[in-house]
Length: 176
Image 1 (cartoon, rainbow, N blue to C red):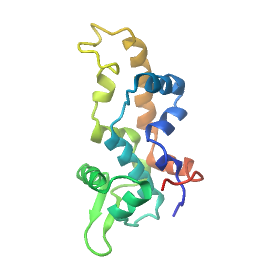
Image 2: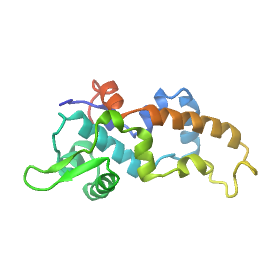
Image 3: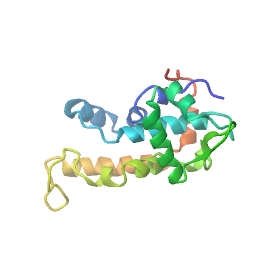
């Protein structure tokens, strides 16, 4: 079992954008506007999945243990894990030796898979500045530039697997 994962300490978006080629654009955008691209459900969901993936394969972990280890509200986490089970990302087992485990290998689960579960495609289609009517025909002032970066981000997310995140963040401290 891996004892430390930095990804669990920080919001899920932080390691993604620091690895992304355009991290300064996104970091500054978030800081100046207060807009977060991905939902809290995604943030907590990805942290839980990475934690589960860091355990020995086939190990079940209780929702309570995940909640306490990652400092995620228990009832909110329960709903998030249920959604991930419904979408075939996780499996839930009942009983005294039950718990949650990955439904498929960490190599086959990408960050984009998780985004699509919680946020769908709207993250890549809606105006990040929340301007009503902003689209390809009537773009806002940053529409063209943002769309180029969103396509690069989508490609990055579709190639980044949970296994990569576990391996890359193995030496960083786990959240408590």
